Amino acid sequence: MTPMRTPLIAAATLAVSLTAATSSQAADVDKAIEYRQDALGVMAWQIGPLSDMAQGKIEFDAEAFTRRAENLAAVAPLPWEGFVEGSLQGDGHGVETDALSAIADDREDFESRQQALIEESATLAELAQGDDVTAMRRQVAAVANTCKGCHDNYKAE
Amino acid sequence: MTPMRTPLIAAATLAVSLTAATSSQAADVDKAIEYRQDALGVMAWQIGPLSDMAQGKIEFDAEAFTRRAENLAAVAPLPWEGFVEGSLQGDGHGVETDALSAIADDREDFESRQQALIEESATLAELAQGDDVTAMRRQVAAVANTCKGCHDNYKAE
Image (spheres, rainbow over the protein chains, first blue to last red):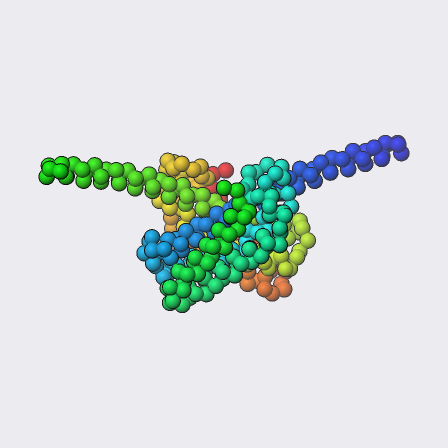
């Protein structure tokens, strides 16, 4: 190997590793989008019967209500780490998303809405330990409103 | 309306509602499959960095380890209700699944493996409260082995 070739090889190696890093970052963004969609899907599954019970669409079942409220509270903090840099609509990743670019315009508001959902869900889980069904029903509405508020602002229809 | 027509109309109404019930049940199976895939996806996301830390592929970060171990323990009980009747491979639902029909042949074994995962994950979350990193690493392997054991038996490659 001549002294002249070493820098060229080093540069080529660097170029390859930069390409790999970029493509691995793109894969990471796709995985983060899929992860948050999974976590939001789990939340939706848990809140469905809570909402149906709260609205009297299905019979109120205290055991099921408590279990789902606990599950919801456990999952509520999870989706948000999936909203990584470059993962919104128009960011050019490989996975489709309903997450509007508006999220990037007001991260602070988006994060305060996440926090509101986490807190309202925790309150629901606490109430579900008791026997005030009216309060539980009202709190399901409070949780659902935090979902809706965020969707109205930041989710494509 | 003649007395003769009433039973016919009733029968027709019944037939329609039975069809609706069947199609709604099929939609429910599809949703259950998607739900369990979401929940398993969330588990995989949480266990990824735990496994990487345990194997030294990424730096051990006590705060991240504890948080992910808690998340994993919270999510570990969730996927299993998605394995509803008629939701395995060959059952003719509308969503693709890797869940082998072998699950139906030994529900008891499948459920005892779920329970093992839930318990191993809870143990990991407990260990993550302490400072015995070797024990934590070993316990990540125990969790991963319960995942693998179930996949080997019940998941299509």
